[in-house]
Length: 109
Image 1 (cartoon, rainbow, N blue to C red):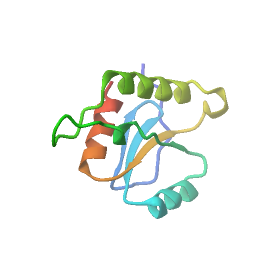
Image 2 (tube, helix red, strand yellow; image 1 turned 60 degrees about the horizontal axis):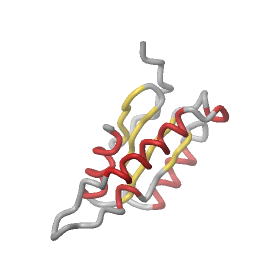
Image 3 (cartoon, rainbow, N blue to C red; image 1 turned 60 degrees about the vertical axis):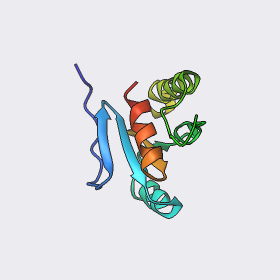
Image 4 (tube, rainbow, N blue to C red; image 1 turned 180 degrees about the vertical axis):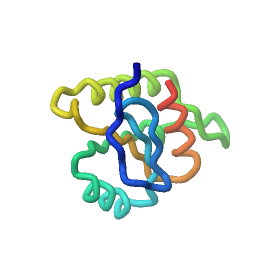
């Protein structure tokens, strides 16, 4: 049975994934800071993994398996952190379509 997620205020680019985990794409630091200030009971975190892809040619993504495993371990760590056990967790990215696409792929793992 899926646990009840704490509701977030309606945001055009915030998506509920599962349980307490949400995903959000922000335009810039200002928008990220505004979201953090508007949602003080929500835990926001990010990672450089979606931006770290090393292209073979002119492509972008997906990340290599070591990055995927590292990202999964980080998400798992935050989902099981006792200090934020009662808080909604939002993984956010800033960047263009490539970064958002890689983030979505990683969150699906």
